[in-house]
Amino acid sequence: MKFCKRYLLVPVLCLATVFAAGCKSKPHEIYTNIPDGGYSLNDKTFVLSPVIEGHTPSEEEETQTDTTGFTSRRYTFYAMTVNADLIIADDFTKEGAEEKASSFTAAIAAKLLEVEKAISGTVMSSDVYLFNKAEAGERLEIRQITYEVLSEALAVHSFTDGYYNPALYYNIQAYGFGGAYNYPENKEGLPADDLIAKYTDLASHFSDLTLEEEEGKYYLTKPAYTVEAEGETLSMKLDLGGIGKGYAVDLIDKMFDDYGYEFGYFNFGTSSMTIKSHVTNGAYNIGLSSPRSPSRDPFMTVPLRNEKLSTSGDNEQRYFIDGVRYCHVISPVTGKPVQTGIMSATVMGGGAAEADALTTAIMAMEKEDAISFIAEKLTDKKVVITVE
Image (cartoon, rainbow, N blue to C red; front, side):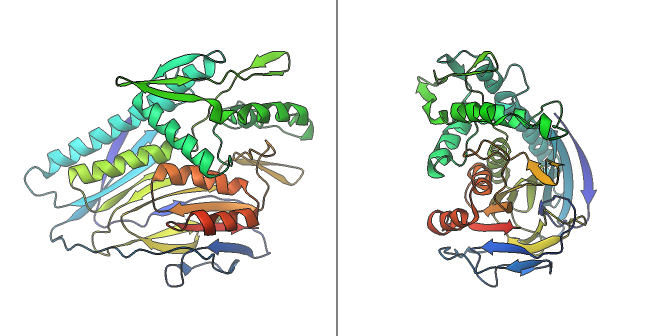
């Protein structure tokens, strides 16, 4: 874990998503539950479809803080294989301000490392790594962080009727993602349907894992269910990449408050963010970048302050075989990379870990199912999806 510090004279524009790919002449669709006036459109290659009903916007009371003498600083961290950017604004000439900033950034670096050591699938001492190596039915003592992440994962799994499922580990690996060595190069290199069906069946038992807290200690019991595949008996494995960064963002959002920083943001790998207030403008203008734009210009801008958000897209990690796109988001229904037509999903409001998992779930839904889900279950959040 390491970070570096750079000084800025003015705050910068945050980009909530950054994806790149080839252009396409047919207009893409935008579906959102944000009412008119809550966003601006920036790209004519996108058309706004009817607004999804059901969202109830909340009014936030603005506080007045004297920001005379405030400047902004950027700090860059590296954790969980991606960069993270921190912006804070303060009067750094005040007594104790430098020490406070140093303490804050050091605490963030330590927290990111703590989360990574708990839930990374590649750190050999992590709870997830040990779970993945454990025998079916084995009970393990785990860290509180892992307990909290998995509790949130189980809750969202239930809330989305299984569309969010972090037990699709074998499926992710089979298609060359999640740290696998190579992408398939042709159709012959793709995993066989019967093998994917076995992996998907195994993942469908995610809700069978058991979490327990006893006298201040935390335990996780692996499901006893196994499948036979390619001459091996396979037990469940987890990949918490679709929720872990959001969980870390939730922790750092609280640290902003604990240290008394009202202004700035923390952007973790361009996929999960906590946004405080802009030191001069109040709200940050968050640009949502097109998952098909080579220029990465935002198709939509949404003003946000004191909110958390996460985004998922089919273009951050992807490859093509015979013109077909294969991305890292796996459908728990087919067990294959999603091909529902939904290119990206962004959820604003609530917890970042929840939003992180929700965007993955929405990507796996058919368009009409996603629209109904947003209208019926996400009325307290702002949601934007793009569709081919």
